[in-house]
Image (cartoon, rainbow, N blue to C red):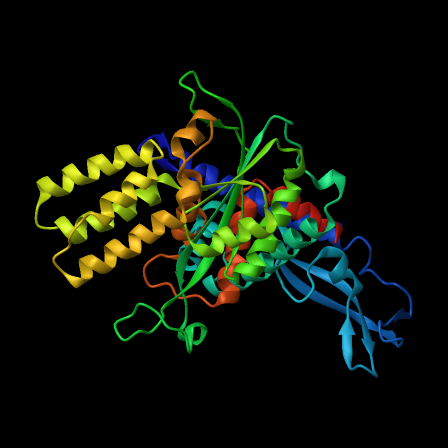
Length: 426
């Protein structure tokens, strides 16, 4: 710890930390075994109406944040059901695993942010705890399922204490989108996709975010309320997702909002959810997605002429920003594409603008101080799903992906502590 007359601070602090952890693990073991093993009499009731008989004491090694400890537990056995039971395991939350709640919390948090293989290195380096990537995966998935259970129960309960109040003058934004998550072959059997031979390689994860706005800046542009964004999502049907979004909006205090705005990219399932669950809300097609559609036309028709492409799209940009969707539609229909592909694109995109005309009144929306883009959700798709579930070489089961999505939604919606309080009281 002394190199050439200098103190090696890093080696010194790591040595002291190791010593303190060893001392802490000894103290923790003494505290956990101070009850003599958690003896609860000669028998313990079984849920099936039988009785567990006391059979003696059994030790269990448990990895804690302070190190490994040995826990003494009274063991009971139900002869009719042929199962054993240690009441102390349930009390300490160590049933069917050898990791303490504190270690599992670390594993789940790391597993939610990092690939499992890299996560084990992070935990060893930062916490001095040695676990395998498979152990991190199992714990993360199990806790992810519990996080999803917590989110659903909280949404289903909708007690007044669970509602996050917002000011009566607030505008609440409900934004939805879908993004592909790479999955194992078994999850895409009999599904058509965009692969070379029409095979599917991904499943769509639907993500929603809710945030509020109470003011505009000096230029009249909307300002999102600080810390007002929450996320929810899963790989599931649009019908299931619609119920999920409605429950989250209720939890956020939707009924207290002065105005509700639904922002999406124009996908039919989004507007079906808006019509069913958020009837009367202002529907807005994300401006930046809308621009992509006249660009599709420009590239199909003027692909070889940058000058014509730039001139045509510049005019469409001005028309769209002004909410003059009729002019955009007219400009598309006046084109004379030289290819069948160009004709198909023009017809398709003219129909897109026609169908979403009322959702593209951007001048009016801006005048009312509304957001017209889904930048918050776009960032959310990258942050909640893309950064963790779409890395090179990853292939998920739907169940595994949904577990990680639930954990990340809890973390990024600032509900992590709420989840752990729920676990402690469950």
